[in-house]
Length: 227
Image (cartoon, rainbow, N blue to C red; front, side, top):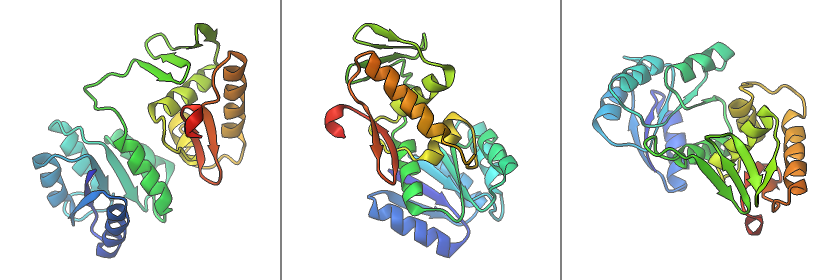
């Protein structure tokens, strides 16, 4: 992926750039909001990684301005501002994801990969097929070889999100944020219990085992032979 990193802290920028380069991404660096905005508009990128507290133009204003002129590049805020209101502001400004400092680099890499695997905005994915499971996103129905599977709204949302990122390892925190909109750890087993119920319903309908637990990492949706 070709990534524009917009970060005024040179040490932090170097750390992030080195790690992502090691994962075979191409990283360009803009040291302030004005430079970041100019490059975000003028060049083609696969991802923008943006600090909130930037000189010249702050990160929120920068992304709002980019979105206003039609820039649709996925954007991830990487910032020390971690309050719930801060996260809401970031997503409302046009951000696609939000990660607070200090952070685990493994989680940053996973989020970058997830954003990179999203289908282009011009392509509307209406059906997911994983092994013998089919999800019709237009009718919000799920079936396995013709057998309809009744899911609760949150169960469907969880399965749909995992299907959008099929093949990727999704951390518990990513699922909490994207499915439940929890930007904190509720200290419950809400993710685990929903995964368990989903597995039981899919198994009962005759689906192949496609929800895989990745020890110490999270969950991945994919064909049985990829487990």
